[in-house]
Amino acid sequence: MPSTYKNIDPSDVIANKVNLYEAIPITGSIVSGAYADSNIKNYSHGMFQSVYDYNYLSSSANPIFDITVCYSANSSLSSSANSQNAKKINMYNTLARSLMGSDETGSVREFDEDGDLTGGNKLREIVVLNFNRIIQKDELKKGNFQLNLGVSGSYTDPMSQRILIQDSNGTTNYRTNAAVGEYGILTASNNADSPLDGNNQVCGLVFYQAGVAILTASVFGSLLSSSVELNSSAETVNAVLTGSTIQQGADALRHRFYDLDLQNTTKLFSTQYICRINHNEFNYSSNPSYLSDSKVRTKIKASDAPVSYFTSVVLYSPDNKPLAVGKLSEPIKKDSNNDLSIRLRTDF
Image 1 (cartoon, one colour):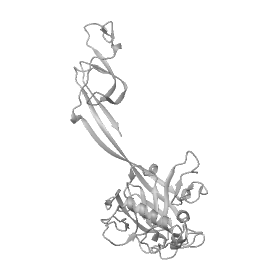
Image 2 (cartoon, one colour):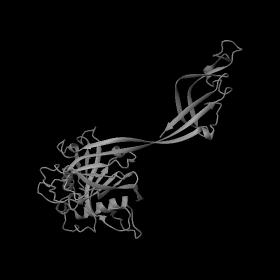
Image 3 (cartoon, helix red, strand yellow):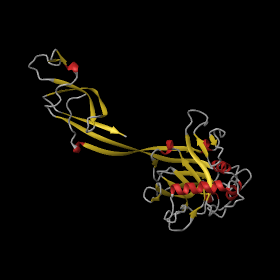
Image 4 (cartoon, rainbow, N blue to C red):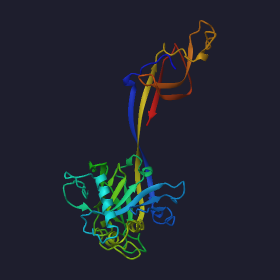
């Protein structure tokens, strides 16, 4: 244990925050069949399915995102005769309450198309992409979400017509009235001979800190000028939502997945400590090996000034408990003829 401590001046403690961004391209081949769906994991509960970057049974596989389809109890499609009707409503309520919160009456707040929560159109039939932490990191970067979906009418040729879904104004025009932080408005534009009725049509929401994208089922329905065959039975999106299971609905969407580009954010917090050592400080070492027969080993003659060598810096708490250790790349000579300033940085 050291016998001498020195307090760091508060002005020599500098806190910084840096955002690191990572581009994540997800190709449609991974999502829609490159591995013959061996990278798609379905569950006995039937509430959602997970997409992996490789065969999910492999120890090296990483989950990318979960996908589900659901609707509100207030949807015109809701009916007890529908396949998995209760599960689809429960999924919607769970997502809406966790992401949007509750209204003043305690009821589930439905997803709002423009995010002002004052009325207007609600997103009541939705497709959900829930990104895994390994993809999302601390949050999704605003203004960098781009999803290409195939909306060709034919099931056998799904990508000849596509729409581009993005949060084009996400960096400046995001909302902060959700239960889980900030979210942006997703809009759809024409891409690759798309039959979309006009550009920049609102089609969903993206929650940046939660890492969740909500798409209205209308991207395969009323937003288009022609109907879309979502499965081999040539069913429209309404037929899939009502007559198919959640797993079948997710399979139908993956068949239309062309590619997805986004960036994640890692928030790196660091604190720098400037350790200032005056000329008359720490010229001796408390290491027992520093002395030999009560003589300083680094002295050649008794009249020589004492010399020590710094190899590490230790930060202590107010009650002298070690908190962090910084090792120097090489020993630094210290004697009464010089003073030192050593910069120590901690990242977390």
